Length: 177
Image 1 (cartoon, rainbow, N blue to C red):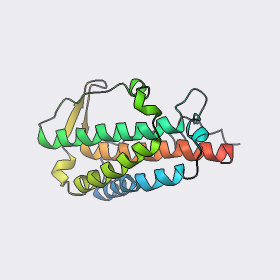
Image 2: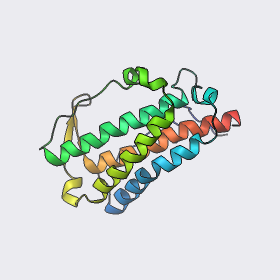
Image 3: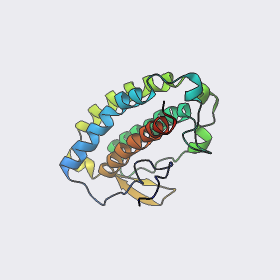
C-alpha cells in the first residue's frame, strides 16, 4: 500500500545534485519556460472563491501561491543577474511568509500571472544564453551559509514552478474542480 501524498510536496521534495549535465540544464530551462502556460492552465476556470481557497489546511490560498511564484521567481532572476555581474555575491534572503501577507497578495492573481509571463520570457532568454562557465558561477546564501551555482539555481526553480503548479492541480483534483 502506498503512503498518501504530502499536500505540502505534491511532486516530492526538491533533491539537489552537486552538478548537472548540459542536457539536464536545458531540460530545466524548458520547464521554466513553460511555467506561465502551465500555471495559467492550472488556474483556468477557477472562481474567486476557489482562488481564495487554501491548497492545504494551514497553507496559502491558490491566489497567494500565484503571487508567491511571481515574487520568488523575480528574486531568482535578480540573483542570477547578480551572479553574472559580480564575483560570488551575497544574496539577500527574503521572508516568504511575510511577503505572502502584504496587501497586494489579495489582488487578482491574474496580475501576478501577467508578471510571471513577462518575467519568464525575459529570464529564459538570459538562461538560454549562459555558457558552461556561467553555469559554474555562484552566489553565497547567508541563510544556508552555502554557495549555490547557477546550474543548481536553474534546477531548483524548474522544480519550484512545478511544485507550486502541483499545489493547484492537486487541490483541483481533490476538490473535483
